[in-house]
Image 1 (cartoon, one colour):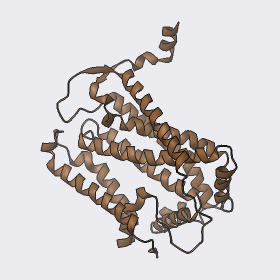
Image 2 (image 1 turned 90 degrees about the vertical axis):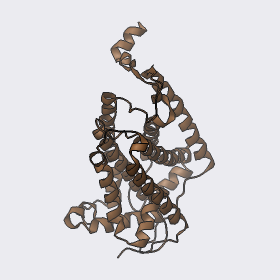
Image 3 (image 1 turned 180 degrees about the vertical axis):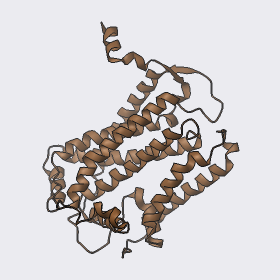
Image 4 (image 1 turned 45 degrees about the vertical axis):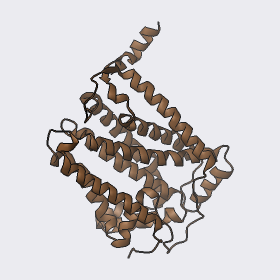
Length: 332
């Protein structure tokens, strides 16, 4: 009976062979990122039941969640720390994919769908920051409005005068519906391409063993439980930051740490707010079509590896610089 049930649900389709290195931690980072995203979706759905995107009530509704909703502080903490976990794991996943040359033929579109997912994660973090509607959220929105204003009619969608609905409410819609829809769609494409092309090979000599894919799922379940445990402990121990309602016309805060590299560049030249993210995304998009060599060995990819390490160290340095730099006003 149970076997017939498994057959009807298609569970037996998970019984296929994958290389044994697929169960090693570097090759499970994408799955751990997916787990963090799932935690975010579930906790975010709960938070939407109590959040009010009106400018006059947004900040107070978060205080209500934190102070009055049963376990609201805990759910908010899980949501916040899952974002931090996801940012770390997706960054490590990107590094692993690059180092193992998993962006090369035939996995170019797997890479491109991953880059698009990375940009959507950035959108989630930005809109989530604004939705707090404290000083940090207000200033994040002002930066976005300044950037969009430089695109003329193309940026009008993000302007205050595009709709009678306040922009905070529109960003809330983007955060809870448009971004999740696009993320799920891209995830389906990404996972489909991984299934078609298989797990990327190792750059060193592997043992050649094959294991059942269900062992990979069991690994991810264990990592998922561990991730949830870590996020839960952090939610209990460290309360996510929340300032009071914003004061207009000042710039006194810094962005979340994952955007500090851009903040440091803004201190040098404010138009880096426009230039830098687009240059980074363009480089990531073009990578599979620039580095077209068939070799995945590190010693045969010295130029690409060197450039990548320089960019990575530069971004880490910019983040550290952003941490020690005083906040200041730069926008015109």
